[in-house]
Amino acid sequence: MSDSGQSPAPGGRRRWTRDKEPEGGGERREAGEEPAGLMQKTPIILAKPPGERAQPKAGPGPAPPPPAPPILLMKARGGAGPGEESARGGGVAGGAGGEGPAQAPPREREGGPRPTQPVYQLHGRGLGPPGNMEAVAGQSRLAAPEKMKTSIKLVDEQMNWCDSALEFLLEQTDVLVVGAMGLQGTGKSTLLSLLAANQPDEDPRSFVFRPQGPELRERGGSQTGGIDFFITQERVVFLDTQPLLSPALLDHLINNDRKLPPEYGLPHTYIEMQSLQIAAFLFTVCHVVLLVQDWFTDLGLYRFLQTAEMVKPSTPSPGHEPSAGTEEPSEYYPHLVFVQTRAGPGSFRPRRLRQMQQLLQRLMAHSHLKYRGSLCPREVIPGLPEGPPESDVNLFLLPPMEVDEEPPPRPGSSPLFPLLPPFRGHGSFGTLLSRLRGRILAAARAQISHSLLTERNWFHYAARIWDGVKKSSALAEYGRLLG
Image 1 (cartoon, rainbow, N blue to C red):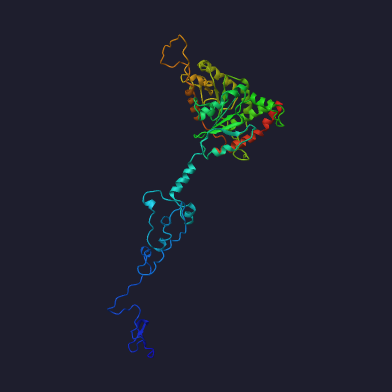
Image 2: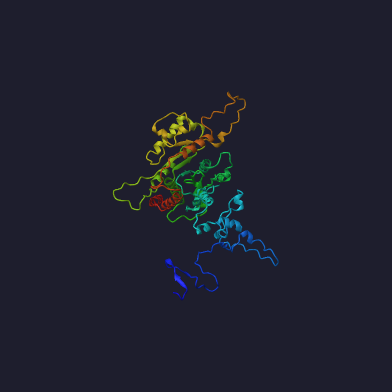
């Protein structure tokens, strides 16, 4: 130990002794021990602030090149600058070096719209989409589909199903389906257009369901073929159908030498089977069915209704195989409303109205259709007194549309009250039409199937029902009996 010039210090430390000094003449001390009277040296900072880096160096010689722009790891849409990108990205270029929090972009400080980043960038960094994107996505989910301007085909003239109506339907259950059927020329398309979106004073060529034109009416032709579809912004579906037992369709079938399906031998049998398929389809998929007539009444039409109710397809069961011991599911039947268009003044008399109701009650006595209670004639004539049960038949009368015009005064006659409108015995066409629309929209919306259907589910359900109607064994047997 003496030859090394070191001696152990208390606590296991060693230090140099004075008898032998190291080379260099200085006194070797322990780390951390400073001689008295000497100040600690200031550390040298090798990095400069960003502001000083950009300034050129004073003195002779060429100026150094400007600093390179920061490297951007992500670039926002819309051509945002580097400053905006670093501010939105949380200081990717400058904030990572501990230079302080990134400043907001100028547009954000001035109150302008804040630029957004793509959703994939935010998700890649573990962040959720910004609030404005969530609002836009929510608005797109809640936005209504495009408003329909005119009707489209649900079933074409060849009795084939069409899928074009699916794009106008939503995934919501508050929907009302209204169908109309009747003989040729009774005003089905005009009535549905006025109930859906049009006004009586508009041009008939702009109606959503195009009615018969003057030339077509003179030739005795039919405007509607198959089933037309229209849905309003209030989510009410209207279905317009081709005329029942139409002579125009029969004439077109005979004169154009159209080939009949092999299961039908005669043209009139094929036309009647088409009408039965349409009526049975409406009785299965509609909440309200309007039977439109322009006079009272055709007994053959009511025999046709009884046949259509007989061949109506049964409501599909909720399961594929019904369990033993369970009750049979109840059949669905819609509300049936008898609408008489072009009704004369004599039809609005209380006695005449009561007679029409009693006759309809006897004709429909054995029917399961809901033809009573939902729309009674007291809505037509508010002063009509209460009567027997047969007075609750759903019968509604509409005068001709020309009735709203003031009749010209007769020559040589002076009215007793010139300022009062002439007495007609009923309300105007517009007043009665608004009452009919209100009663139809207020009809009870029972479940068409055993499960609650959305608009899109109703469309698929209706497609399955139409396929079942065309392949119905009961309709096929009835067609063979007709010959």
